Length: 376
Image (cartoon, rainbow, N blue to C red; front, top):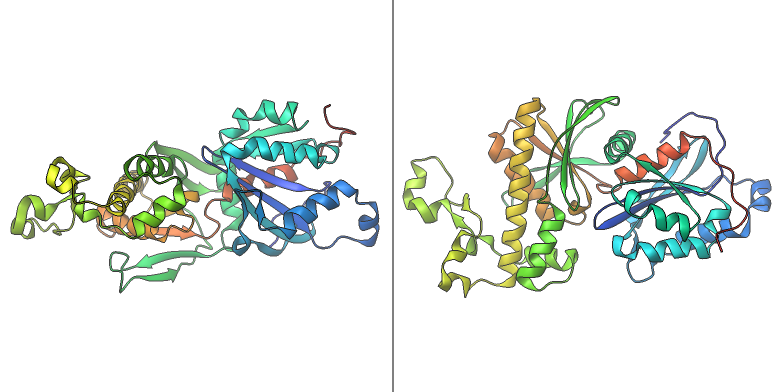
């Protein structure tokens, strides 16, 4: 995969960061075509960083390298290498900055391209502790830039019969021609962007009910501690015990209204009843929370799709990481609310497009001179 033909020389290491409200996404380009001369000239600190990042799949207690998302043998600025995808919770940012200081990152790279709210929130810490300057980048620009560069190189897919666990099938989708496209980015919150070309895209809408709401509500309602635990609970629950359905209100009358009996009429509506509250499980509550959040996102996405007349709706963001259940719920919601006129699409590397966009911005600018020593 060739991302650019620019011939400017940039010193390694090459990083791009997306610092969100809950999770930090980092992409690292590992060169594979290092010459003997470069190998001899490569300073110990750079070798140490490369060795540390590529020889581990976990960093400390919370950092993870998503090895299944590694993009192998791609070309950036005429250099051949592998792109590694790394994530860690934003509450561990201080540990990451200290690691960069300990490994003398500032002696090689004094500017780090970063996007997301944390690029503003942690700017001072990067400067004073890590001796690093953050180049703050617009998150929508980075999301679109990174996504469009990876379209055609990562798997795009949809779900057929998403509502039926037995008949549901994951189907590949050709997104070589991505325009127009409505992109719904689900992280801690939700943003919706309409893309008409690589230079013509516009923010459409947003919602506070995203991944952060799902995890936060699950923590309160079930006593779980994190996203993975909340998702595990949801996978075992039955939201019909918690939600009030169309059949609960209309009985057999919902058939005359042409409304499926299992349609959610009121999220958490059954919890008004004390006896029903006493019978629901933690798993049911987690599942109902997931259904509530995804139904809301699906409804917003369909309204944006109709407003912008864009039938292809692409869902991205780390809320979808290992979250096939949410993807199926979104696919079902899109089909239901649009009456089949809109289509829900998904991409591998769902949470790393912003970080890739930040990396591309780094490579589109002249690399700064390296500093001789970190701040004392």
